[in-house]
Length: 101
Image 1 (tube, rainbow, N blue to C red):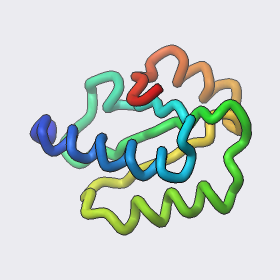
Image 2 (spheres, one colour; image 1 turned 45 degrees about the vertical axis):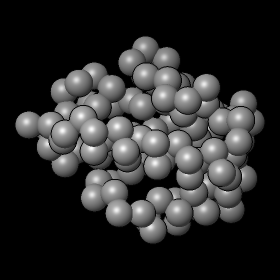
Image 3 (cartoon, helix red, strand yellow; image 1 turned 30 degrees about the horizontal axis):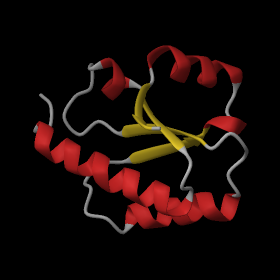
Image 4 (spheres, one colour; image 1 turned 90 degrees about the vertical axis):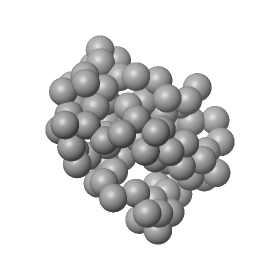
């Protein structure tokens, strides 16, 4: 069973706002089970951030802290695509859904 679409859309908009507040020109990709449409209720949200260069670790942690302060009741897993393994980059390229360009 999946979360109601309007709830997920609200989560999406909140996450985009948080990420773009810290890294304005970052592309955001949804990947994993939610991108494939095979997720179960309560599944995590996997996001790949593509800033075309490494995201400073302090900025990355601030994004995570900002997300933890929200009321989103799901685990959010973030990946800096620039620093990711080739396997993960290929997975995001193959199945990723661009949330924000």
